[in-house]
Amino acid sequence: DFGISVAGYPEGHPNRISELSAEEVAAMTDAEKGRCCTHDGVTYVCKDDDYKKEMDYLKEKVDAGADFIITQMFFDAEVFKTFVNDCRTWGIECPVVPGLMCINAYPGFKKMTKFCKTRVPKSLEEKMDSMKDDSAAVKKFGVEFGAEICRSLLDSGAPILHFYTLNLEKVVYGITDELGITSGLIEKSNESDAKDMVAVGSAWARAGDTVKSSAGQGVVKEIKSDGTAVVDIDGKVTELAKGSYEKVF
Image (cartoon, rainbow, N blue to C red; front, side, top):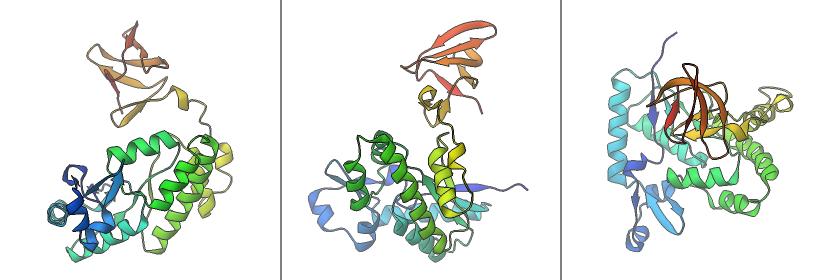
């Protein structure tokens, strides 16, 4: 079967999320308070007028032929539930699939939530800060939190779950084990090559992957610690600096 999915943004598209002054924070509506976020002491939100424009645009995308919606990552289940209700209010009746970014590491969590201006509940922020120097504890908590939010979403009627894995399977396997979808899968996870993976935009590359650059297309032989890729391009081994190549899917 062939289907078309479109992106949905429960907290508003990052380009429509505004930095607020102290006066604007004090004047936020209840709806804005429910989707706002704070990073480094600065509050951001997709204002009601901009959120309406986002929903109008989403309705246009669905009316143009989309079969279902996959959302941007979020860490507050209530934000997703509100978004689904808003979709129905706008006459959007297709399935809305929650997009879930698994918690794998403290630095990545902080970087992504700040970059995307994602709402992080206070309790989650405090928990993450309390174990920022314990990578094993973070992964263990990632499984626990992931399973908890998944149960909440499924109980609210989410039709299916979509995980943004970044090619790191351990936490996802742990979550599916906790949910009873799988059994013992986490024990089979192997992230030994995680250190050899580097992010380039939204893609990851590691040894064996095909990448392209201005020098041509080739196969990655090695990823160095600084992100430089050693690539075989038509039989010639070439080093490509981090950021100068991207994975070919």
